View: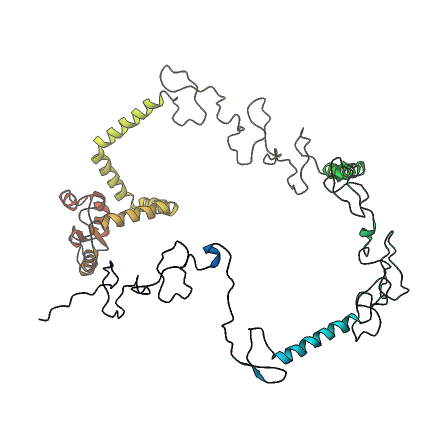
Length: 468
């Protein structure tokens, strides 16, 4: 294996920076432009090393002559040599002495003489014929007047403004100069009459006040008072033309768009109904009031009615259904609890009695159930939704598909309870109200009589009780 060569370092004394393999000058980047024995800055007291390509002899801080102090030495351009040029007049080539030499020396002298003659000829040109105007005219000017007085004839009029003698142009039809062209410029400047206000007024201002202080004038105040007085008079006239409330003793005015004939306070009180039935109260009743009493006397009982509890003489409201006062209403609730306990103790007997009544009065029972379902559709739908949720409890998609297939499979089976061949229902052997589900193993075929008689019983209890 070949050994790696030792890395090269910068050749400047004291610098050990490594060099790249492509470096051919033998110095690092910091000393690339500094020769091994480079010159130093020529400024007094500065020993800064100069770069290899430095031609000024000074470092960057002392590059300009101002930074070195003392008088600035003039640069010597005598050694400069410019490229030969072609003279634009004689077409001869010559070597210019400076960058501004465009012509050869002979042509340059001729050109200077021509410029001098042109200046002398310009001074000898005619001046404007208007008195007091010494403007020089062009050689092509044939009217004898400068551009300022070109359109002003010698015998022209002056501005009509007081104290202005500005001559007018020949085509001026207003009779005023440019400064007094508008009427506002010809009117003397006026100041606002308000104390401490120096705002200038317009020429058409008759009040003597500026806009912020115009309300101080008596004319403005009188005009404003007349305006508001007219508005108040019109408003009062319109109000007097409105109708009065139809309720006796009410003198309020109603709006023009009011079609009831009553004010806002009496708009909901019909005038063709009776008054409150309480003696001495003349408040009229609303159309939907069925109690015969106004809102003030609605909750008060005006008849002699006492609490039904023993030895209680408290008065109760007329709309009290149970007839007990607030203190003894708990006793009635306790009696209701006693009735519930009594029903729970004899619940089988009451259910057997209800079942027997439904069998004996089937048509009447079905008519009552149909009427209730028709008048309570929301409750019926809610009960049906709860039934569906209870039936699908604990079932997944596979269980539901299996339940549908099992219903189709037993659709021709006889009744599970009485073996009757005429079956019209699918019954849950363990009822839904007691925790049963819609799994296939809980479904049996049943006739209408057995299904209605079973109601909410378990299938085993129904069979043991003789299907009655």
